[in-house]
Image (cartoon, rainbow, N blue to C red; front, side, top):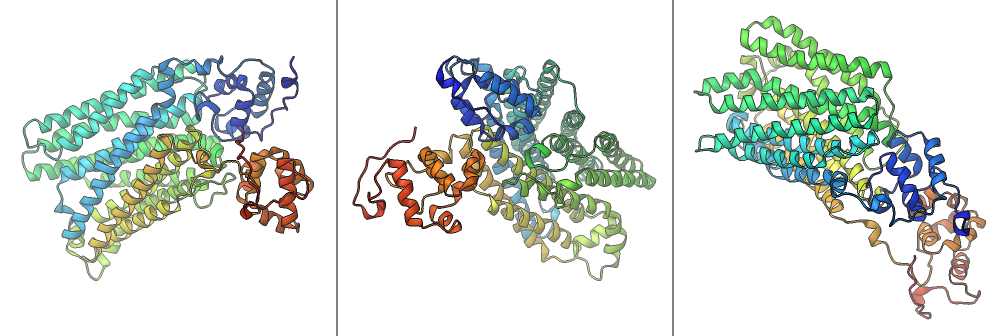
Length: 627
């Protein structure tokens, strides 16, 4: 056995995947066995082995055992099968990108952008009825199918096979589902608002059929992937399967509602159809599809990614049964109430709403503002606040009867819209605020948070080197708070309409900032490429972590000076990259000039009297490129 292999250190859980793969390419077979499979590019994501084990559901001890066994292999990177992939495997590894990018395009056009324009129109006119129901439905459809649907499909195609330690089955069919879905979304966005023109209604219906076909392909590919993995289904998988069932059912219902509303013979017929079937459809889409999917992914991934609490096994199992029954019940009893005119159906419908709110809050209580995450990064604030918005929406849903029966009647003054709400016993303003709290506050925030976590990881970008995304976080939360609060206020005062109308612009700006940031990463940008080249001199303003990367021979010197945390590779790649020599010397009560001099002497093998300040310009050495 050659001496290089003999000198290879034992692989430990604090080592980073890229450093292991660069030094020992033969270990890729072990990583791929447990779901790496193209994630992070040639050298994998910038995460530790301990983190990889948690995220991929692997026993850490077994992983280290197999990696250490593989390190003695003489296989080279060029000979490894990972670098000789079939084009379909390559497609499977990167297919999420087209879904994510298309989702960003949709939300910045027919989704949030169109919604912001419609909201401005409502704010300007001072009435929610000032815009066409067909425009509103086309916008809502783009949000559910384009923003939520495309991100769910892209994430599922990439992540679910890796959770089962297998490959995606038939990436070509997955790719077909992408084109069918994109055609359907834009066909609906164009065809539904202009359905009265020749062939535009048919275009919209064709789009709905294409979406159903895409969803069937999506479900089929995932089911076959799960089956071929040979892994047993887990408790979180049941939530995902239930969400997939609702995804299909709501697509059928959405197409049916499209056909009915565009064929309505009169405005009265249109109002009857919308008032009977639209709210139940939104329940299936938001609570059935989106919420259950997020819960399923969260139960599996949030403890691993963020260190959030893992719900109890019995709670997870029993909650799903109650949630599915509650979602079906709230939709079914609403339709029965509207179709029969029998108000007694309100009682079981409200019972279902109570169950939905209570169980969803109980299941996610320790993911929200009460959470104590052990992993801190820029995505945690998005996830925790999203859960807080879920709870807000559910509390508002439970308080709906109180609002309609007590608050509105006892109000001293009502706007024209509020008087109409009181007369018909239903408030579009309040109910719309409940919906907005969950669609933007919960679902969109969760998409932004998870995407800002997984996109850098999948592209091999160290998330610690990226900006914290505080600005879009504040903008979307301020916008959502304005929309929810001032939309309710429109029942009491007309001046609230313009304020609610402006809120959409804040939310759109936030989504655009994050979306363009993620697009840039998916297009190949990596902040690591912008790190300053290895300098010709070390100065007091250079960061300790960078110095050790540029000049590994300085590490023993720094350790003898008391910088013992540098012995940990993770610390060298995190905190040490933010601390300058000047700051570190002050903390350890060392003479900064002497420390800089010693670092230069070790780095450049110089005698003690060599000039060390590169700012004086008295010494010019060739810049050395760090290998």
